[in-house]
Length: 80
Image 1 (tube, rainbow, N blue to C red):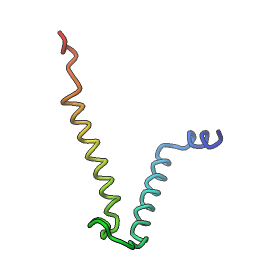
Image 2: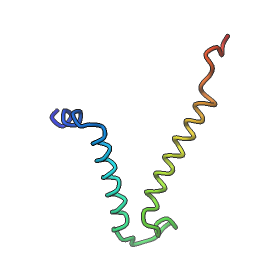
Image 3: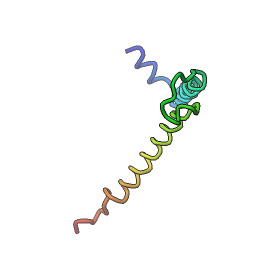
Image 4: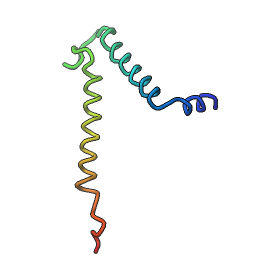
C-alpha cells in the first residue's frame, strides 16, 4: 500500500518525466547492445524496432479515432 500512496502523491508531470526518461534509456540501450544475428532488415538499424512500434501505435490510435467518428458514432436524432 505504501507504493500506491507514493504514486498517488506524485504529480502527473513528474510521472510523465520519469516515463519519458525510461523510454529514452531503453532506446539508448538498443543502440548499445550488439546484434549477433540479423534476421530482418530492421535488425541492422539501431532503434528501428522502437520507432516502428511507436509509429504503429500512433497509426492504430489515428485509425481507431477515424473509425469511431465515421463508423460508430451517430447523430443524437438518428432514430427519429
